[in-house]
Length: 323
Image (cartoon, rainbow, N blue to C red; front, side):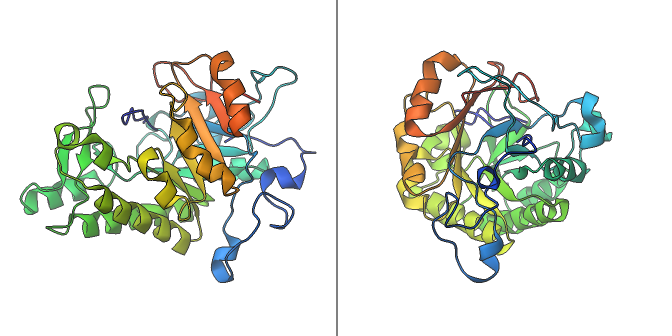
């Protein structure tokens, strides 16, 4: 589910003859990555700056064989010309209930189909709010009730009342518990074959107690976010920084790319330029802004931007990439 997480939340196929560099499959010296860590981490997929993405967190029953994900999507970009296909898909860890019949089937089918097209898959995981439709929700609720109701805060928003802000402080061991739960989720991303992970809702410190129900300091947020990034890398996955613009300079070295919602609408995209300067892509999505008003700016910033509907739904279509 998407999250208007103070912005909001919550990729598709490569043409058969597309150059390997566009997929990040060539040697680091040939692609956007100029250096990679040694050892096991060297195998981590890191996308080139010019990767084109698709954001589909909601399944389409017409594509049941591929977990509800339209892996053949091809749309004419705002810049015009022939239709283009994404090289990166950001999709949910689980197949949609409309497709799988439940909310607990790993979307392995989608990942396999994405890989068969030569593209890569990012695993969407909500790390900062607790959704009541997830298969592990009861474990969060039980811990909350057994520990002085110290974990689940206020509803995320009027639009998403079925999720509650998580308390990432550690006075009762909340953060330790959350990281244990997130590790179990990341293990499932690995099991399903994903290449990277997007941790959503990692900016509680920017919202304040009146919104979240908890007092979260910037320092506490940094501890949590860096722990998530380290966890992903230990598991062999690349990792996205979702929003959290106020801490980009402190986190760009820990994350491999950025995923952002509505930075053009709120005139705050410059904060993310640190990623591009570091040779790391920025995947951005706008909901309320017309492509003609932000695609030129996205090109200047070298962002990979696309337009999705103003109701914040994230189905396969409409899909309007800038380029």
